[in-house]
Length: 210
Image 1 (tube, rainbow, N blue to C red):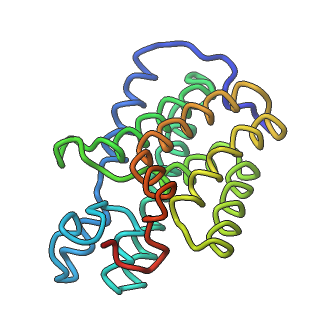
Image 2: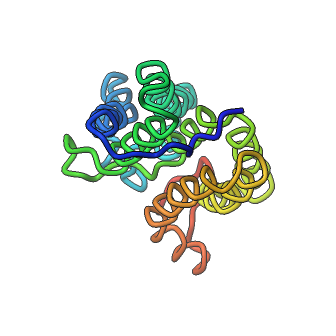
């Protein structure tokens, strides 16, 4: 399997991939879907987050699933489009640039005043596109922790904590470094959740945030 970290060079092609990845990642599917369904502004519900977990707090499971798939899909699409578009000329690093743009776009969308989601679904989509084995292990980790403890935030934190290890074992250090940086962004966006978990105030999956 191709190591998505070899041959990294900064060029206009990578800058374009970064920008286009950002634009794709910044599409706020959770906000758009809840508005289209007549549920109002998702930013005024529950945690105020635009991701699938907060969409689930509206009680609409189908809408939450759609948000999850679309948010993951945009991360994967950014990487796969870069791979197809750049070919050998861009090198695997083009996928990194597009993936970085997608996660930054989701976390800090210009359209929403740079206040976006927490990057879990989008990050998992990026991992699946970069190396399906790493992405699959991260998804299994998220699911296992969610089933046991019922905390979406804890599931995400552990999945992205272990993902660099999965990447190192499956694809080597270059991918592991990128995944470590990706995970650091996800952890940073979950800093309030970490405080709430430590205080015992974090709501479980499907429960409304007090």
